[in-house]
Length: 543
Image (cartoon, rainbow, N blue to C red):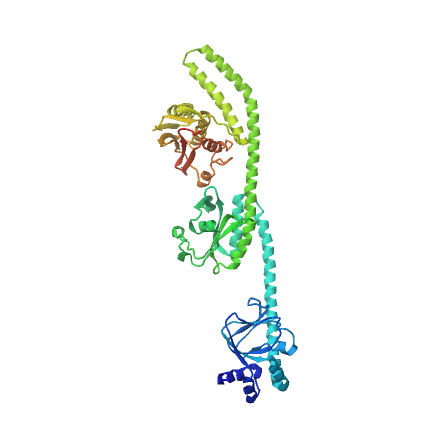
């Protein structure tokens, strides 16, 4: 046995105070074993057959027979373990796992039994160490209990807070108000300085939100996948950034414009109960340090309640719109019933007049009266059909130039009264295939909105051109324009801007008719600079 082994034995707490002769004797009766990190030296539940003295390395005593159980204590050089099973003759009560490369001196059980009977000092040493370990264990139990009590208290407080959050996010069904409440809560629970709550628009492949610019709410939109928020909306990953300017996904342009310095960012998906991404939290600059895992956990808990509240708000708005459409439908039905008989009578009188007038200049006026009576009835029926979701369309081939001239002839007098000049820029006037009545309704709705946007007068420009198999009709006014949030919702039912009259269905009907023509509609508008609406339609309708 080497001198180094003798030295290890002399330094071990189990053999403190014993004679040099006994040390030499023990050295002749032990075995040297080595273990790698993660090796299980003792298995819980097995019978005791050795006592282990640590010459080099560090081990942990674990409750459960694997390396991931509850750690009871850690032992290092000069410590010993495994003695209890040889003293009380019970199976091992815990496992021992190597934390580092270890060199262990093991004393066989039968020899150890002779030692403790022949040398009381060893029993005294065991008693001292057990007493010390018991004190440390009691202190650890007390610390663990205090920590556990603190954790339970925090969990209860967190649960109560989540209950309060649930009440707050369910306090409104107005989507704009709801997004504001959700953002306030997110800032509160993360102690962030600023933030944004985005919602996913699946149809457009975008995320959108509303931000306060001056006294007005402005809608902002980003493509899914662009920027940090767009990346989170696309991947569903949580992004926790400690230094924004070191992350290539961060765009510093907004900081340059506003003078605000972004340091830390926490961006997380808002998911519904089926794990579908419905929105994104983006929090900026935690006030005291960096965003933590606890912040992520709290936002994740908020996410579930927020997604349910958002879904409820959208459903409530849809129900309101459906109810309003039903009311409009009933009203339209009543109007059709009330005006049908007098209009039929007026039309009959006009037809009689036409026969008596014969071929004269006045016959054009009578024909126009008959035409406008039919159009008035059709317009009312159109509102009724829209409210019921009914689609009926009759295409016919007409000359686009004649169609535009007819529309202008009808608008001219009304626009002159309102000091509005109509300007034609006709680059294409060939044959097209449209539903004349419905497309006339489209132009009238657009024109009347332009008239209302120019109360002091102005110019209304009608432009046409052709590209490949499509023709374009473009309508531009010099009116007051509209803000971005109105433009984004222009084709939704019941949206009006700057008007004291109207149902708010005009542009929704326009969109429906253009879609029925397999066309597209584009809007450009800027406050104080007017509005341009462009229709792209197929020249020939595919059967």
